[in-house]
Image 1 (tube, rainbow, N blue to C red):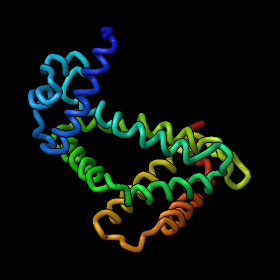
Image 2: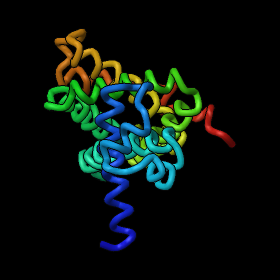
Image 3: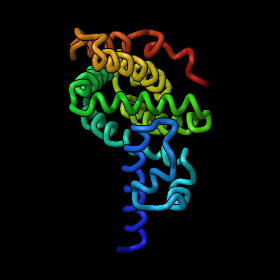
Length: 208
C-alpha cells in the first residue's frame, strides 16, 4: 500500500470512528476514544486534521457531500427556478422517510450542541456547511425566473431561506409535529417562498 493509500485509509477510519463516537457522546467525545476505535493514535488525528475541531468539521463535510451530490442530480440544468425549488423540496420530503432519517436528525442536534459548547468549533462547522451550500447556490444561479436569470446574490438569499424552511419542516415530520406535511406541502411552501419579491424579484440589495 502506498503512503497516499495509507493516509486515505487512516483518514477514512478516523471519520467513521468520529461519526460513531460523536453521535454517541456529543461534545464530550474524546480524541483518544475516536483514535482507539479507528485503530490509530491521537497523533494521527493531529497529523491528518490538525485538531478535534478539524476532524469534526471534516466529518460534517464528509457527511454532507453525498447529500449535495444527490441534490445536484435531482436539479438538472433545464429546470427554471421554481421547477428546481419544487424538485429540491420533494427531495427533502422523501429524505424524511429514509431509514437513516432519525439518526441523521440526532447527529444534527448533536453537532448543534457541540457548536454551542465550543464557539471555535461552531465557527468551523458553520464554515463547512457554507462551503457545501455554495454548491447549491451555484445550482440556482442563472436559472430563469420571471423572464430574468437569477443572480448569485439572489440565489444565496434563497438558499439561506430554503435551508431554514427545510430544516424546520424535516424536523417537524420526523418528530411527528407536522404529520400532514407531504411532498406537495413541501413543494407548495418552497415555491411560495421562492416567488417572494424580497428574495428574487428585487435587486435593491445587490452590491454595486
